[in-house]
Image (cartoon, rainbow, N blue to C red):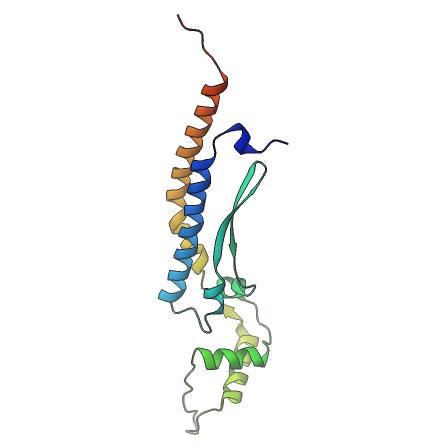
Length: 165
């Protein structure tokens, strides 16, 4: 199978898709920072977008830590691991309030309270990535339509000859 770039000049498309990838990467990072949806910074540091080309296909790929989906979509009720909660408490930082008895819970107690709440109701998703792409994609759909129209128009003009009068 021939690659698309052998049939058609794809440089403008490739450049536009790379710009799209950078817009998504930059926009998602900015959204996480603006909404303070980062604790350790590990997810933020892992975000990288690029364009993968395979024959006649192009894909904008976003590389992220695996747990991004739990932040994005939330979780169903479950009992989370205590170590992860303790790390999150320390990184965020979570400031405990005194209980009814006036005592401030220890990090271990606080972790248990958070675990119990997640076990009852799960976690709410932030939808930061979806909101980022929803804001970016309309512009890029139009831009890519224009580029593809020009590319294919040029290709057709190069292979079809019309008789001159």
